[in-house]
Amino acid sequence: MRGRQVLMQTLINHGVERIFGNPGTTESPLLDSLLDYPSLQYVVHLHEGVAVGAANFYAQASGKTAFVNLHVAPGLGNAIGMIYGALKANSPMVVTAGQQDTRARLRDPVLGHDLVAMAAPVTKWSVQVERADELGPILQRAFKIANEAPAGPVFVALPINMMEQETEIAPGKPATLFAASRPDPAGIAAMVKLLSAAKSPAIVAGDDVARAGADKTLAKLVEKLGASVWFEGLRARNGFPTDHPAYRGTLAFDAPGVAKQFAGNDLVLLIGGPFFEEVWYAPGAPFPAGCKVLQIEAAPARLAYNFAVDAGVVADVGAALEALEAAVGKGNGAAQRNEAMKAQKGADDAAQNARVEKAWSRSPTSMARCMAEIKAGAPKDVVVVDETITANLDLFKTFTFKGPGDYFSGRGGGIGQGVAGALGVAVADLKRPILCLSGDGSSMYSIQALWTAAHHDLPIVFVILANREYRVLKHNIDAYRLRFEVKSNKPYAHMDLTVPALGFVDLARGMGVAGTHVTKADGIKAAVAAAFASGKPHLLEIEIEGKR
Image (cartoon, rainbow, N blue to C red):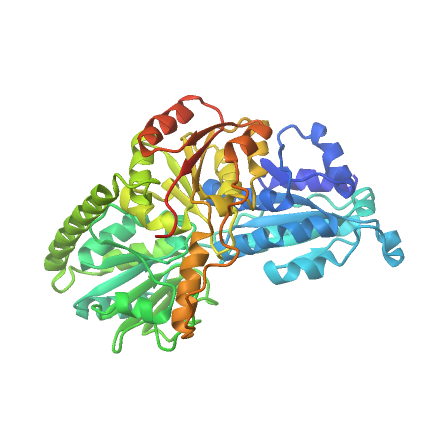
């Protein structure tokens, strides 16, 4: 059989149902083969970065390995930023790109370059298939490496002439692996001893808690311990219900800020994450003096990587939490801490209600009211794909995310992931309505995603929060001036999205998506409800206040 047939059959053998791609000449063997493999749906995109962004979120939402096909050197270059986001999110993904005919290698062909070297810094493994005989074994290894903890993208370059070579080496099939390691009983016992002695424990729930579906086990453990729960500042998933009294919010983006949030804690348990992604350097540790630190990770490379721990366990996150929850008793003073957290949650809810009420009549619409109105108009079972950035605090104080499938976001800090990622969540076929929330600046990095939504008839409601500025950058330049003692009353340079103002409804219409421009808060709820009722992709441009 030919190399292209080995590729397509390997994908089917590994359970691939979607190919995320942007077509090009060197991808002709794959594209021309699609009609022979009707079980493979090609999700077509107008930009390679959008294809990878969609595949990243698809992997998170579906629990499957995403497969991407890009176009030679410029196409791979366009996608590098989104591959970085997938690496940070630990999304299992096989990224491929067509490569020029290897017989023309010494002639410096148009679009030719060293694709392996380009992809290597942002992937777990990067390789080029030189002969069709290598294709089956390399793809088999690629799927394996992409899924090994911590999961992430791999890259495979596919020269066009190799795809047409004959080979007798059959397509690879996935191995039947039982890789969910059980925790060392001694490690669990050491953690139980420290947890039982803690007077004020805290837990940081990383993405792996959601990925393992261990949120309910974590909730049981939290209630036994009377522990508070935090999320990282950047996260792809939620591993704990946000309406639970123990949920305290998201951590700061510098070590002193995190240490301040942990100031009342004598023990912190870190579960399934890189811990921590900081924006600003500041001296010191993220933990207060004398605080015990425990960590559970699925891969040894992450354990105690950034700081020493008092007890660390390498195991399947779900299995480790089950063992820990079964072994630990009621924490010292847990009942009192649980009651105190209930009271705190009541106070926090009241404070948010007061905040919304105070901001209710502001014009342009405040972020607090905007989120309240969006929630009121959205279906109860809506899935949120989030890239709100500066509106994230109000989003989490307004919406309730009970399970890991309620919320998807991007890691790594690269913007544009939300609008692209919503496509991947949609084709994961969750049987639930999808709401994509994005800032106006972020959305412009992947606005071509609207065409794909229309082309594949994906009923996503895209909400663009239009404050006509890069608001987060204005906050960050304030922080920069403060941290580096830069005395300045200068304006914010090049951070306003005006002159001309972006017209998102016009942009959407040009790509086949209906749109509604909402300028007043009173119109938000009805516009959101109507957009979902349409059963079609729809864009809402909502004008909100800028930095005050």
